Image (cartoon, rainbow, N blue to C red; front, side, top):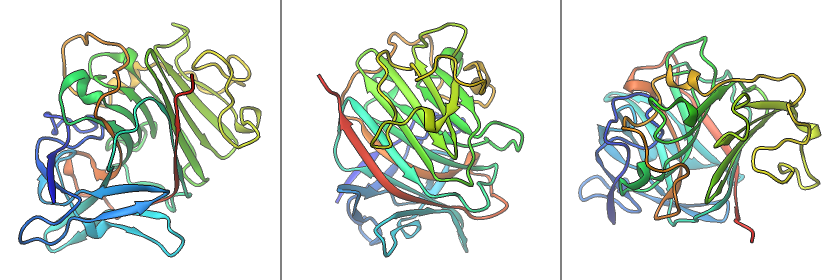
Length: 305
C-alpha cells in the first residue's frame, strides 16, 4: 500500500481544477482496516483507485473504490452513488508519469446528461505544489448552474487569470473524445462530439480568438485523430465554420482554478505529474440524480521530435 495527498490546497473552491483538495487518499492498496484500495488495468495502463471514507477534495467529497469498475468489455465505469453515509464519488490515477505528449480519452454518450452539480474531470496532477501542481484540466461541468457551458479547458492556475481558461458547449448525447496536447511552450485542447469539434490553444495564438469550433469531419486525419496542422491550436480551416468563439474570462465566473498570485510560468514543465479521471460533486452538494461515465479508451502519444 502507498498513501499520497492529492488535490489543490483550496478544495472548497468548487471547480478548483479536478485535483483533490488537501487530504490523504489510499492508492494502490487497502488502508489498514478498510480493505478498499485497488489497482486496475485499463487501456493498457495501470490505474490506482482513490479511496477516502472522509471528505477530501475536490468538492470536498467521499471517494469509494466501489464506484470504479470495468465492464465485461473492459471499459472503465465511474459512478456517483448514495448510501447510508451519503454521496460518494470516483477517481483513478495513472500509476506512472507520462510527461509531454498527447493525452486522449474516449467516452460513451452520457445517458441523460450530467446533473449540474456533477463534474467529470480529465487532468494531470503532481503532488508537489510547484507550477500549480502541473495541473492541466478538461472538465465536463456546469458548476451548479443549469445555464452554464458544460465544457471547460484550463491551464492552472486559472482563477483570476482569465487568459488561462476557456469554456464552450458539447453534446453529451453523442460519443465524446477529449484530448490535450502538452508541449514545453504550448497546450492545445480538443473536444469532439457529434459532428462538432471545439478547440483552444494556450497561450492563444490570436488575442481575439480563444476558442474555435468546426465540423469534426473537416478536422480528422485518417486515424480519427485531430489533424496536425502545424502551429498548436490551428484548425484545418482558420476561424472554423461559425462555431462559438468564447473568451477564457467566462470560465473565471465559474470559480475555477486554484487561487494564486500572478503565475511565474506559462505552460507547466514536465515533472512527476500523473493523469487522472474523476467524477465528483461540485462543492460536495447532493445532486438530483446519480451519474455514470463510461470510458471506452485512453490513449497517449509521446511528444515527437
